[in-house]
Image (cartoon, rainbow, N blue to C red; front, side, top):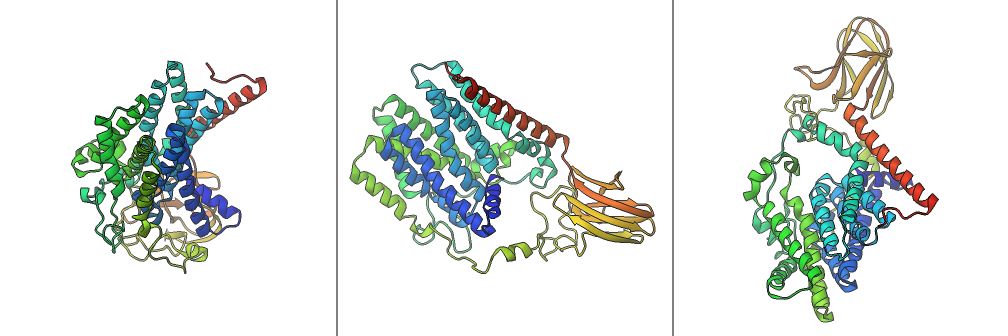
Length: 482
């Protein structure tokens, strides 16, 4: 959701949709490195921060997302994630209002960027907050609870977004259940293309390599953890990163399929290898610790050169289509001429039958007459409002060529009209009847009770935050300061 608003903002400023998308991707990639640098710098020093940022930027999965999958949501979430960890740390250390607000805002942005990343990382934010709080000699339960409350505020700010997803998700094809996709363990160890240096195959297949240098450093971290005496802070961070890496890596393997299947809330991840984002964060932390322990310039230089060097073939798309522009995109139909195969996706309502012969065929009209005689004039057609003047010469049965979903309403001369959407011939399409006469017909998409509730909670949370900020500024008092 968030990246598409950013793209629209650029487009509103006069930039083409395609270049707006590229700008969003570029900014996300750059910010992800900056965020990791400042977070690890704050933890382990400048050199550690720099190397951790290199490993985060040039992680195989990050480059796969950037160049091959072009997953805008995941790229945006990877940009926000390091800043989110840093904000939690800064609030626990300073107890300042601005970090409380920043912590809440960043989590909200993370949730709006990518559901899967935010859901998988929320427990990590809690664990990290606990670790930062625990290593503080002057720790107080109040400080930890206030930090957790800032995360709760972030969740409440996005209630308008995720509450309908949770309650209405079961009404979509996606919510009916998807099979978790696993890749063989060899995919995470080695790519068979171009001597292992290209992470995408010749037919578009992807190999989610953890990274060659990364595997060596993980082995080194295991040795250091068990054989070398480390400062308490480093020991906690290294041990936690290794343990979480092991858990997440195992969860990406097919042997864990029963766990995914009996846990509906994570089954919606669809791809087990999406946990590679968290894996990349753990590795960046490990690398930062190693560099702190061994700050030799030659070692650091070689580490960075090797990490960047073996990813060289994955820095960009192997082929682009320069003929695609905004005009082509605007004229590209939602449906394609492949009945029975296209025309629906995971977001389609469950009552749409993808095997009906009309699926995939672009409707000639926005509204059709199934029975009777009528004259129809379309006045306006927006995304959430379709407006017609209909002169029914006889009793008529009409088909509004829009998939029904809770919230759609049809009124004729401002009076509600019953909607049928489970017709055997056109399942999922809105069908309604009109008696003979002249009608002003409005087809409007409205909020259901859960969408209204989500919006109210989000707005109230935002209002309370604004009031607290005003109080803090107006009376110059320290907010949540022990």
